[in-house]
Length: 465
Image 1 (cartoon, one colour):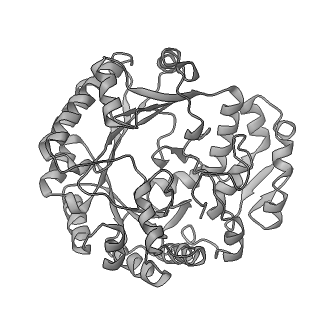
Image 2: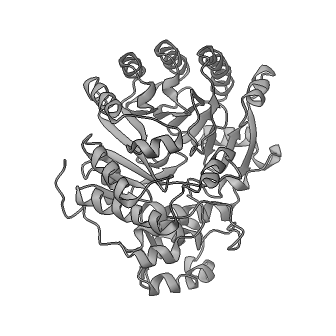
């Protein structure tokens, strides 16, 4: 366990303020949000976007969506394929090989990869020999910087020591463990039985094989959870001594994920007040244990790269959450994967048959996307500055955005009066700063600059807390 220090200890949270501002809102892994993506090719201009990105150069960040899971976790909001058929992994790698070939032919081979992330689904559904094959495919077409961050999402229930060895051979140096909750009653209610001994085993293997950073994913607001039971989960997880934790608020979106309807039928979801208590419990225990509140749902040791980036004002945010690698163009591979260049987003087909059909036709499997306007880019800069740096410098933004900031965004700045009055932000003539009270509500502050935000009562988003 790390010792608390001045950097790691946050100000006490105000439950009344969090309750007041806990409204539906985007997570701002992108701006505009993915709900604005369009299916018309003219909306994202693939050829022009790729040409512009090559001209801009710079490093690459690669994401591979490996969608397979053996069983369905009923809370899950990811794009998954449920199967026990192991042959599916080899068939999917055939698809990825074709997509890599099609995209690599459009990329400058001199551009190095600074970041690679394997997500899903369950990447460790792939047998070790298929993980080795994936590593060979990637390195056949791309070269990596010496300090490249290579991370993988791990399901301790589906992990063997040979998986860990294969991942290290691929170059992986960071791992994120899906734990969610250690209470057997909660695990049964969400259809994910996972004895805590499996988490210990996974961490032991990963540390022994040289993974230098381990993250643990938890979710609060799940069926049968209470503040007390979630506190015991936090105690269990802290014994693993993770470098980072992601403590997500359960996103109840049955209109997108029908499996979640089972929770409504059983009436097992905790009420909003109980969910707030869990959030407060998590924040108090983790900051009390010395972890730094990075923002939203991320916590990290004070000596972790995320904490250092937060202090330096260089934190970055993309579709994988908070990151330390800014300035890289994101290229996603696999069904539902999202790519991001300077002024475009693109998303692959979300269904495996559609994704596979495009590749059989020798086409990049892109279903929808968006080309940002100049105003979109300006607002993205503002929103990401709030989400990552927790402050706005008006003069610096005026120079960076090419507009007189105070004049161009007078209406949005005027709308912040209630947030200022409640102590979520502090303002001067030179800029604004998010206070410790406002840190849990970054999304609420950013929403004031969102030109696409739907009116209250019509927003199809999960709660901000």
